[in-house]
Image 1 (cartoon, helix red, strand yellow):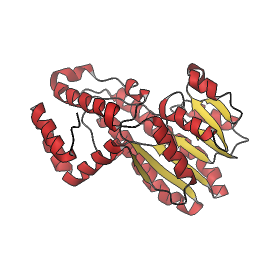
Image 2 (cartoon, one colour):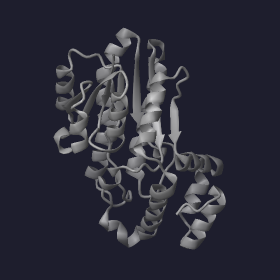
Image 3 (cartoon, helix red, strand yellow):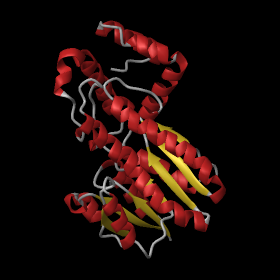
Image 4 (tube, helix red, strand yellow):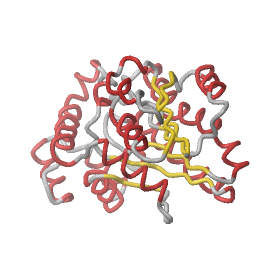
Length: 285
């Protein structure tokens, strides 16, 4: 029975992933900072092949403690899902805000990766799944720091995939668009942005709402993609999921970064969303 370790399992993608793998022939180690605070996770932990563990990926001691406790397990599949969101302008978002996003979304994944590589390398087998975002493939206004964490995770994963290929260790990036999960409530906007960036705040709200109600996908879709990656004979390095992720990346690549910069100069909302409709072929907000 292969061992799957999933981070950030209290809700959303992590919970869906742990649940899906638990339905197969896998030993699931489902982790969260406070496993007992999630009724769904506690219920899942009652299954014979699910082990709940406390883990804060931002804390090296917590990571070390987890792997000391898992001494009898070799992790076959690592799912780096734990992450936080958040929005705010570069001008007003605090350094602590930026550091918290990077600490969780990038260094948290790195800590886990460094723990599993040695045994995977020795066994010449393993899979590392990093949950990134379409925001790791293209920028979004007022999400600079979040995008930076995902760009960093993408760069790490692509380089690492080359390094580990000869050891038969699979690496992939799951890159969702808008996913209906609580992550949108875990990061706060910056009040100071109201004065100079309210135009962009309004546009972002309209686009996120569109994604949540029409264009995005549920966490079960993401979980299914991970299971497919683990079992397929033709694994991919990138999995862009749901129509908004595919379309956002395609449009950015088609029109280029200079067009993206110029779009920031459009002051009229009707004009802005009309331009976007011409590019996407449908209303995006």
